[in-house]
Length: 355
Ligand code: SAH
Image: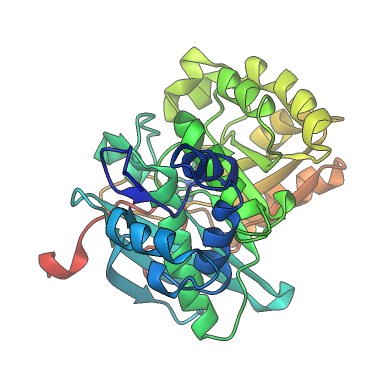
C-alpha cells in the first residue's frame, strides 16, 4: 500500500464518513473506519499493531504511516468539589484548557471543552477574550481533550455523560471542526453521546447558527445574552454592534423547531451592572412566550477585571422575578472556582512555569 497522503494518516477525531472515505482512497474497505474507531474510543487501544481485526498488511501500514494524536497534559488542577482543570499543550506548543465538572446529584459528568486558542470576540468580562485570537482547533484537537479527560473520569469509576462547548473560544466561529467533533462524540463507534447531552454555547452569530441548522447534528444551543437590551449588551459584548438582540430572537424560534429543544439564554450576572430588577423586567418582556430557558451565571471574578460577582441574595431575587413571570430559570452552580476552572476563566496560562 502506498501513502497517497503527504502526511501521516490521522485516525482520531475524524468523523466516521470522512475516515471511511480516507480508507477508501487508500484502496481499503470503508468499514475499516468503524473498526479503527472502536479500538480507539471503546477499547482505548492506541497502538495500531494491537487492532487485531484489521488485516496484517493494513496494521503494518498504519503503524508506519498512521497516527493517533493526543495533546500533551501539562497540568491537572483538582478542586475540593471534584472538578478538575486540564491544561493541554498542542503540537505547535499552543495551550488550551478543558474542565471536568462532576454533578453527583444528577449523576452527570460533564466536560467543558475548548474550540479555539484564544477568541476574536473580546467580551469585556472574559479572560479568554483578553488573550486575543490565535487559531482554530482541529476536530482531532477537540476530541483529544475529551479523550484524555474521559480517561481521568474513568479512573474514578465514572462515565462521561455530557459535553459543553463552553471552554476557550467561540465554537460557531470554528463550525466545521466543531460539527466534525460532535459527529465523533455522537456515533456509537465513537463516544455514543446523544445530541441532547451536547451543548454549544455561542456569542450569537446568526449566519453560523443557520449553518449549524444545515448540518446533520442537533446539539442543544445556548446563546450568551448577558444583557436584555442593546445599549448594555454592546458595551460588554462588542459582537452585539454587528448582530443586535433583535437578530437573535427569530433564530431562537427557528432553532427550537430544528432541534425540538428549548434554547438557553445565558445571563452572566455582574454586580451593579445587569443584576437589578429593572433588567429582570426587561428580560421578561424580551423573551416571554419564547421557547427559551434562562441560565443565570454569577460572574466568576478574575484578577485584573473590574466586574464583581453579585451577592447570592441579588441573584436569587433576580431569579424569583423571572420565575414569578413564568420563565424557566436556573442558576449555574459555580464549580471549580478555586482552580479558576469555572466558566470564562480559561486562559491557557502555563501555571507551572510561572510559579
Ligand atoms: N464563546 C462562547 C463559549 C465560551 S464562554 C460563548 O460566548 O458562549 C461560555 C460562557 O461563559 C458564556 O455564557 C460567557 O458569557 C460565560 N462567561 C465568560 N466569562 C465568564 C466569567 N468570568 N464568569 C462567568 N461566566 C463567564
